[in-house]
Image (cartoon, rainbow, N blue to C red):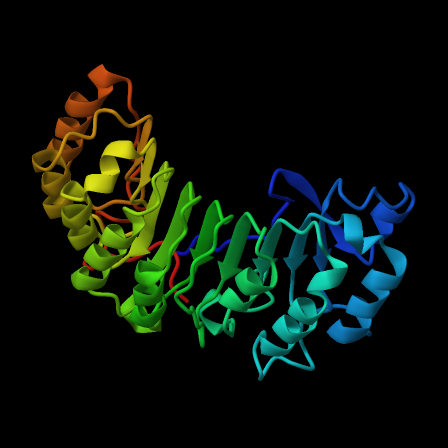
Length: 317
């Protein structure tokens, strides 16, 4: 099975990612201004455990000016407990990061941990700790807990997984994000815990209809991609979108037909259907529908799709 694993972030929230403590090649350049970078804290290859690095971070950086934080690997000490102890640390120090506007949890590559092995926790604690947070990114979904809540400031939410369980999706459907502009969920496959059904997708789309500023919807990397297309094709919120991303999944002709037969999508700036398993006649129909309207259409097929008997998501394990 082919994979396209996520790699370490090089930028986040519009800022370059800077390692703390600095990599050898960065030390000569000097430490950047606290608010000019997204600070990445990782102890995978460090002798110091995460809590020691966290204290050093506060001692050495003016954290009251920090706006973006990226959490890399936090093990070995806390690997079995997941990210919970890290959430205890960072949310307990929320008052020391008053300008924080963006957090990414588990910036981890496959060489450090497969995406399906990353143990998360109740990530909505971050939203409660920072009412002004504008962006939250999460990688991995084992033990992921999302509590339904109202958050006035969140604009971007991204959850990358090889299998997103239905409970967090249900919670997101019940949450209220009035400022949300961008949401991206990698739903994954049932082989790795992605047990969402069409009813959860319909509920999510209904819930997101209360985010009037939503412009980017990504429901990606799913083994129910055809069902997702059918749900999206009739969802009223789609009329307000600028970009619709249904890539990385097992999209076939049934899903393509649903998109063509549902509400018009020609108002979109971009429609991403890459990593698909559709036939050539179907992709040609899609091009003929969207090209005259200037929609940027991504239709790269899944690698080896024509030679494998079974469809597969882009990122599973």
